[in-house]
Every structure is written in structure tokens, then in C-alpha cells.
Length: 494
Figure (cartoon, rainbow, N blue to C red):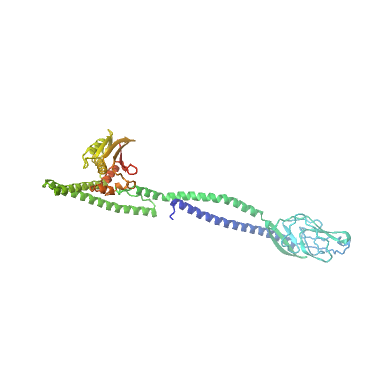
């Protein structure tokens, strides 16, 4: 089913939809790329921090004093001392046999985002509060999980070793940070440095980006729709001008041409093609009009001679019938010649015409059906500008048509309404069906009722009357409803 939307609206919707899809894809790609880039930057920062601490560990010395927990309280009186260059180890961890302790009485955290392990921890445990102290170990028993706190050893009762957690920074869940672990070789073996970098800046950046895209994309789509609507409207403006001009061109003014835009695009070529078509149409119509006019003109003289001979011939039924036929042919020839002149657009006579007088004279003229009563209601001083001969022909055609179809009476009224002369002609005949209100003004059109009642007439009377009315700046229409026979002509008065 063909779309009822205009080309302008369809182009606007299509352009907006295409831009919306493009912006959606671009936004998704941008968010993905930015997320990956920022996450990679956080990972690189975590790796940088781990590498910096690893360089410190690798460049210093670690001295271990390893006490033996043999249930003798004095055995743990010594403390292990660790030194990394001029800086103490920030965080120490315990793993393996518990008698291997890297310890400092007052551990100092150099970087809260870096931890050091004797072996890597996956993942880093997160404590809701201070890290719990492990229970007393047995001598020589190995621990299976790393402790990510700095510890100090103290002597407990009965010689048991008690490990107490030292202060340390608390780490958030792993999905809030980017982690990096790096091994480093020291004099005491391989240690592992794990560093973190917060992903909060990444989240803030993405939040800001979404806050910009959510209102920005609809606003941009509205801008695209508005600009497309204006651009397409401007591009189609020549088409509207061409359409308006073509709608006004009729058979009487085929000399008019559609405007050709200055742009040398498809619309300009369309206008040029339409103008060439109008050229050919004007030529064909002019030839047809000239042929009709010439034929009607050439027929007038032979018909006049034939009528004269028939009138001078011996009276008889045959001569009377022939004379009647010649009169009808003369009337048809006269009508054709008048139509040809009207179609050719010959300049008419613009003079002041008393339409009331013309109407009264034509309505009072005798007609073939004298039994039909013609009633006149004519307003005085109804003056119009035009051709007296053509207006007389218009009134005669309307009254003749009414008398031909009337049953007993015809009413002719002329009045002035709103600066117009209104001529109404009514009859009490069978009327005009609603579906034929326009068809009766076509040339050579006769309704079935007219054909049954009257074999005369060629169906040109009303067509000529409408052409004359239009030529005088007015119009002619069927004013009655249903099957009422009511013809109304209007003319501007002066």
C-alpha cells in the first residue's frame, strides 16, 4: 500500500532514523572503547606501583633473624629486623613454616595500595574489620594461606607464640580496583608485590559520558530532523511551484509554462520536460481549434445558400423538412465556431452591459414551445462588464434549455448579491440527477431524458454558457438539490 506521508516527512523520518542508528552504534563503541582504555590505564597504574615497590625491594637488603618457637618464652625475645635500603618494609606477610617471620616492631605503611607477600594471593582477602589473629601453631607446621597483615611475635603463656595483626590499609572488593602482582627476588627468596589502582575515576568518567549522551543524542536527533525538514522543503520548493502552475493551466491558457529552477538537477530536467510536453500539447490543441473554426466558417456560406434555395423552392413537406435540418446544421455550425473562438482566447469586448435588459429581451423571445409560460423577475440597473453578444447567447441558451425540458413553466430571476449579479433559471421538468450536475456542462452531452423528449440539440448549449460565464469572470453551476432543475450563473457587477 502506498504511503500517505509526504516526501518531505518521509525523508525527514528516514534521515532521523539513520542518524539515530549511527549515533547509537557510535555511542556504544565510544563507551566500550573508553571503558577499555580507562581500565587499561588503571591496570597500567597498578603495574607501575607494583614495579616501583619491586625496584625498592630488589635494590635493598632484607636481614632475617629467625627465632625458633620451642615453648621457651625466652626463645622469642629476639626480633627479626628487615631493612630495604634506608626504608623499612611497608607491609610484611607470613607464609610457610611459622618460624619464618619477617617482622618489625612498628611497621610503617609506605603505600596503602601496595602489599608484599612471600607468595601471591588470589584474590586478596577483604576483612570487614581488623584481621583476626591466627591460632597458636605447632613448631615446624606449615601455614597453607598467606596472611596479608604485618605481624609481631610475642611470648604467650606456656611458651605459645601469639601473632597479633598490625595496622594496615583495608582493600575494597576486587571489582572496584585494578590489581597487578609482580615477583621480585631478594636475599631471602622470592617475594611478590601486589598493587592496586582504583577504578572509581573510570566509573565517574563513564557516568559523565552517559550524562552527556542521554540528553545530547535526543537533542541532536531533533536538530537533525529540523535541519532535514528545512533542507528537503527547500529542495522541493521548485516541485511545489511546478505543481501549482500545472494545476492552473487549462485548455484556454496552454501558452503558460512551469518555472524552471536555476539548479541543473533532476527537478530542473523535469520542468524542462514538462514545458516541452506543453509545447506539443499547445500545438496539437491549436491545430484542432483552427480546424474546427475553419470548418465551421467554411460551412456557413454553403448552408446559407442552401437555406436560401430551400426558402425559394416550391412549398412542400420535403422542402420544409430540409429547411428544418439546414437550420439545425446552421445552429450547430454557429455553436462550433463560437466554441472555437472561446477556446482560442480571442479578446472579448469589455463594455458595460445592462444584464437586466439582455435577460428580459432573450426571455421574452418566442420559442418552439409556446405553451410553456416564462416568468421574469429581473432587478433593474444590473450592469456587468463584458460582451453583449456573448451574454445574450448565454441567457438564450439557459432559457432554451429550460423551455425544452419544462413541463409547463420556466422562471427567470436576476438579482444582485454581495457585489455579484445572480441569474437563476428554473423549470418544472424532470430535473438533473445529482450524479450529472457536472456532466451536463460537457460538450455534446445529453441525458437520456433529453434524448427521449427531444431529438434536437447537440448538447453544446450549456457548455457554451459555462465558457461564456467563466470568460466574464463568473461561473455556471447546477444550484438545485436532488432532481431540481435550477441553473445559476454569477457575474461580478461594476
